[in-house]
Image (cartoon, rainbow, N blue to C red; front, side):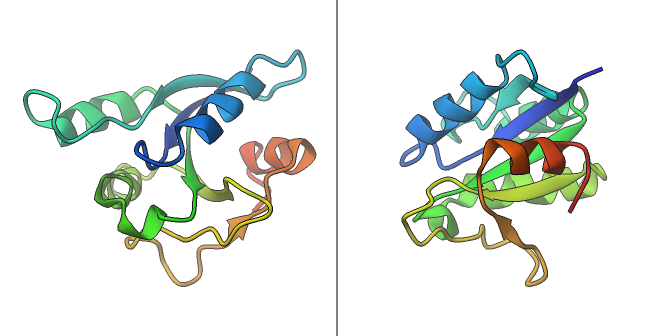
Length: 128
């Protein structure tokens, strides 16, 4: 059975990368389904409560790291929520040719993995 994935990403800068990742969920050999993704803080109500509810229904959190992820406070909060909920997560470089940064809530030991199809399948299965 495929894992349900929440994609955390810098919505202001990395929407194109998120669309590509969500598209990969449609591949016939994909080990994951795209369940939900980041929300913007200006949504009505408590956006963090909405993220918590969305994360209740996923198996893994993919944190897409772009060039400005270190400034994306929403991504930092989503990673913290994933940890609070004991959701497995991994950091994925959104671009192979750019310096991708971690969210400020990432641990120093959190590795940013290269985004290849084979690598993504292994990461979804827990190989990290």
